Amino acid sequence: MKYVVSVVLSFLLASAGVWAGPQASGTSSSSKSVANLDQRVAKNQADVERLQQNVGQQESASREAAERLQQQDRTIAQLRQQLKAAQEASKAPAAGH
View (cartoon, rainbow, N blue to C red):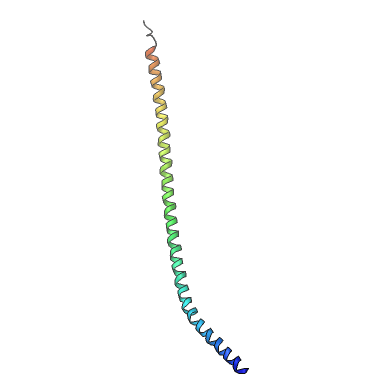
């Protein structure tokens, strides 16, 4: 019985040694994986910042375009009023006749 226990213990210790090897290299690959993830996170954060800047620029350009359109609308409205006044003046009989 003691022999069986010692064989089982020897087997368990040997198995633990076999598992310790891959874990040590697994830790190294885990470190590389973490480093790769960190790099990807940093790249993604840089991409997000760049995209936010682009969105800000586009929003600014959109506001400026909207302001230009509003100014053009006001100019068109003024020109229509002037045209209407000129048409009405040409239809009215001359005061001296």
